[in-house]
Amino acid sequence: MLVSIPIGMSGSYWIYVRTDSDNAVYEGAAENNNGSSLIPIHVLQRIADLQVTSITAPSSICRRQTITVQWVVKKRWAGRTKRQRFGATAFYFSTDPTSARATFF
Image (cartoon, rainbow, N blue to C red; front, side):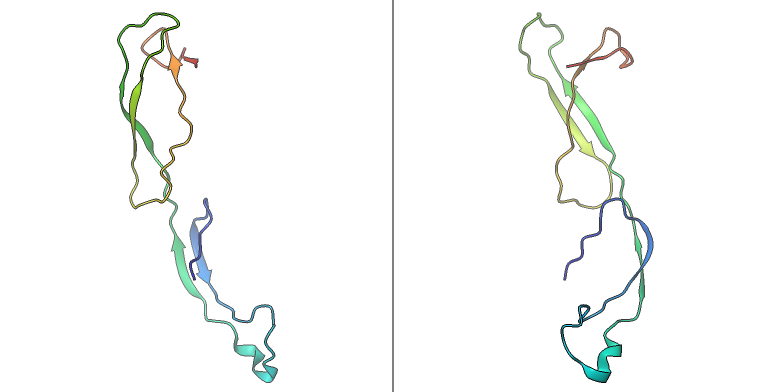
């Protein structure tokens, strides 16, 4: 059986398995041995670190002009993931070379 660990769960836990957990099978006096022993497991939480590693856009444009912007996002954490989504992407324009006064588009 595959067990999916919820997002955000991390730390030390114990795994315990119990068969016939709903008592659907009559076992008479042998009902007391349906559980396993506890085994320790440590759940690691890998925190995503998404980085925009490059961006290309025209160096000058006219108002109301449609442009093409290309960018590369890298995920930097160990291991593989089934999820390939990087969340929402937002575009901003700034009047200076910092993002402090950027306007969302």
